[in-house]
Length: 325
Ligand code: SAM
Ligand code: DTB
Ligand code: SF4
Image (cartoon, rainbow, N blue to C red; front, side):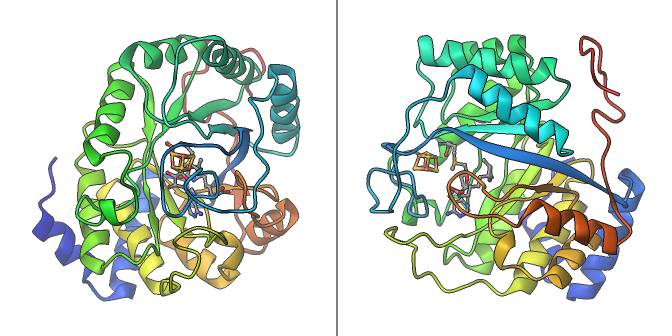
């Protein structure tokens, strides 16, 4: 079903609590509302990226205080994955600061990592920059569940933030991912200085992707010293809630994933976001390069709200995995 921009705009402008109420209904019709998918992120190759994303600590165009690191060894990554699994995560997302995937030993190693994580019974997800159809197929064969590639913002605002990678190139990578039969994890960042109309346009593009993303990360800008967006004014938290509710209504089956920025968001606002349909979080003290709430604080919050971590591979085909419950 396609959604028009007028429809998305009208939804976006509904009174906030009406919107949250409707989103909560959609959420409950499609998901177990007391369950949260717990995910862990690992930066497998940090820094030195040649793209110029204005928010990013890892771009060579920015001056963020960051130690560059070469691609991690497979065994070390799998050890981290095992720890994540033992602490309750069911999805393990590996990020490399590459503008695009290049065939060769490094990519072979990432395929091994994907296979190792999949064999452990966790959902492997990677984010490696732009990707060809053949590369997507190799990742699929290795057992990849999802590829994270965000649109980040509206087509209209995009070149105020990134100039080295085009919007259409992002869409092309998403097409390659879809052709290989891998789910897309695709969302954006709020608080880049975009307008309300930009957020509407982003949500409109996301919900009209075919197929719709399996997962929609909603990042709140984490301002990083040394980047052009270090002093961006903070987005009103109700705008964040509004976007989550609209995403839930327009993409009823997707996991709506609270990604960057949760450390600065109160537990009350996070609870309202869960009400509005957010059902996945990243746990652990670090995202890729920036801090995240401690695992214990997240589990305590779920407990206070009477929620629980989602079981591994629930309602999904687990053939081929030996350890999944
Ligand atoms: N290099 C890959 C790429 O961009 O395609 C993958 C890694 S990149 C860090 C993944 C996503 O993280 C970005 O698309 C962006 O949405 C988000 N992100 C990066 N830095 C952020 C920040 N400072 N605040 C919020 N979100 C951020
Ligand atoms: C996404 O949209 N958010 C995650 C994940 N995909 C890879 C990354 C957030 C990164 C936040 C900035 C950092 O820690 O470097
Ligand atoms: Fe950062 Fe990814 Fe952009 Fe590179 S492509 S600068 S790692 S967000």
